[in-house]
Length: 118
Image: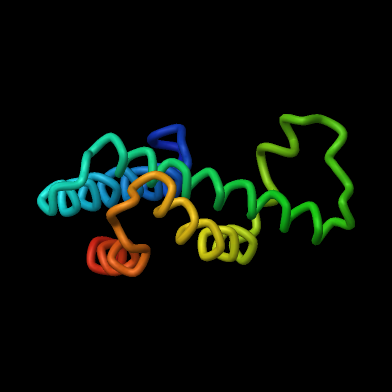
């Protein structure tokens, strides 16, 4: 039986969305216990997520010799590349952590992510 036929949505996308929401909730909860402002932590998570999305899309375009799809909606549907997203996160995380939550070191943030998502 195909779960896609039952729900009408790709179950793996739902699972990924749930993992991101729950993981972000745990990161916020853990860092709020250390007296960091929750709005700043949520903004930090969002900024790193957007950096990863942008890096994945740039990597996707580079793989396709910088050729855009004819329709922008086709461009947004597929072509995501994990190496570009991971690289963008690694580059953006130390910068964004210092800008959004100045008292938090990027090493502490990475440690919190490892505990939360690990």
